[in-house]
Length: 126
Image (cartoon, rainbow, N blue to C red):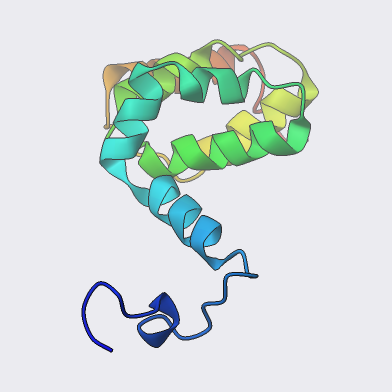
């Protein structure tokens, strides 16, 4: 059978209605899509994720913004700047985030970096 009536498992090896393949594929696409990041950011979704009480979910949200930092540097820096000085766990997240960031991406990102230094997130080694 060809065309739209053809069962999906013929074109997608491993597909079964009993698997979670489709949600995983959708999440993977969402996670890497710049246009969907813009939508999520502009609608306050990313900010809500960063404010979650679930630490694992917040860690995922920080990974998400890190993935889109190069294209949306100003937006990401603005989101994360709210968490400077918010405790040791946030300090660790922000240090992890800043390790691969392009500080030339935006003035806001560079300012976030300077705030983290002022906040003594990076302590000199003895």
